Image (cartoon, rainbow, N blue to C red; front, side, top):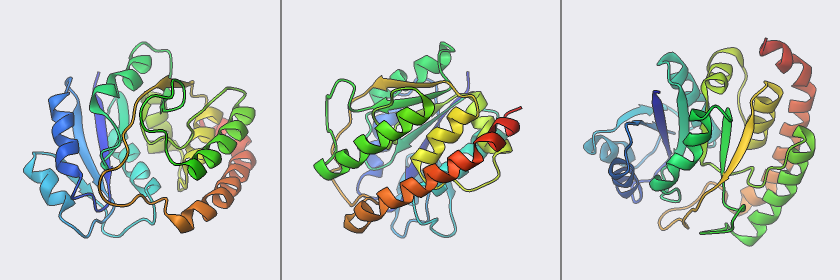
Length: 239
């Protein structure tokens, strides 16, 4: 099966070399692609020096979800069977990739989330962010009638059906992970969580800064409402 690891970045020059080297050291026949959100540092040059191909946004999309749209389109156009998101900030662990890929290979899932909270190993995020994650996890679990614990996890894998859905059928922007999860579920994807470990970021700053910590809940609720309004339309699109 063709597997693409999409490394998403924005100004990760201090993290990207070690992240890529770890991926190369744990490569099980995967293809790698850097999706860069218009970095202003030398992130892309460092990736190129490691032999990694890049797709670079000419302007910043305003958040990481812009890179998600790009990697879905790339994976669809290049006929990949499995697509994985791997953050370029060093928090994800390359040896854990097999955990999120295996349920798709085994045809048990179409959308796999690597969850920090199933076994509570490794870095568990910061206190106030965990509160937000918990609230949205409960809300999303209620809507899709299935327990999910780590809705904001960037460590995800998608099967062919989800790649085709977002790469060809769904024509709108993707604003946050709540929207991505709900639309996938409405589109018929089988959602699955697996326990993974993550690290704390060593260098740079997350896009979830002090201001975003307050705006994230509001935007999340708006996106969830939008998804609910789109529910019937999505069921038609999937057919």
